[in-house]
Length: 463
Image (tube, rainbow, N blue to C red; front, side):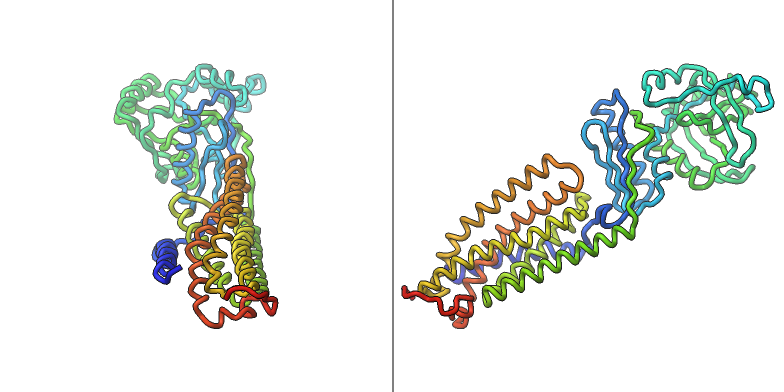
């Protein structure tokens, strides 16, 4: 191979390397770490029966908006199958708060208060609470148009009341915006909301009808408050009181503002909590494994192939830089997270990359043993070796692709990094390893058999 072509191939490798690394350095990007490396919460929401694909897609969007509004770092919200939504929140350690926000359907109802039953009232024990079971979907939906009995206890303590409520008069769909605010009269926090223009006259008519009566505000069949209507509300603005803390008011305003979920989810979602300490330990162990593997492979190649082993060390360095850059860019632009399984895929790929060098170098050694020079053998040996490398990498890539398509969870991360590694291996073999060997073969020292690990095992042949 002539020098111009050799330098041209190296130039392609340099352009690709710089094109990936420079944006990473300038943008300050780094790999986005998954839950098993950073710690946090993983919540799987499973829809109850009756959820279609359109409703699930809308529910995923609403959950994503709720999570993003929390200001968490790099959350992941993704549909899983036909009836589940996976929510991953790196760095979050409060499952109760998370579930109250992402798991709440936020079905807001305005109902007329028919009766407030005190604990001292003889009817208190005789009045059963309404059973609310989201898993019985038909009965759950029917509650909207029925009289119900809910209990109410002030957040500041006190007696638990039973409150009989009439059918739903208006729902949370009428709310255009909501925000938490300080309750100037009672202290604590409240939620101020603004109605849509279409709902303003409806709410005005309802409050006019219930003048001097109590209007209950029910969220997911939990009675939040039941204030007395002092005057008709005609300007489209209202307030939900209930002795909320600042965080409770803010979270409630958030779910009201972003809208109700169109499907009902299992009230007991699968929650996995991974401590930050465990995540850091996993990351450290993964990095140690990768670094140790890299060092051992480099030492092995140096011992076995001597001068050619230097080429392998350089190729592995290029491989590592490209892999780091690609993982960092994927994390920034498509929210792909590096997991412990992904690191395992990278560690395995170190062996794949080194194996390609072994195939090439063994071909070279055969040529040198026959008495040929390294310079005359570089191209001929590569042509034979590259066919083997291409076939092996194609088989590995197909396996990784099938695994990525069929697998779920961490296995996907392993398959993904393994697939990227096989592509990089082909690229580095063609655009870096071969050209570098071709250039080094022009040096006198590299044409000494012992310098490429052949020793004295040379048979007679052409020079």
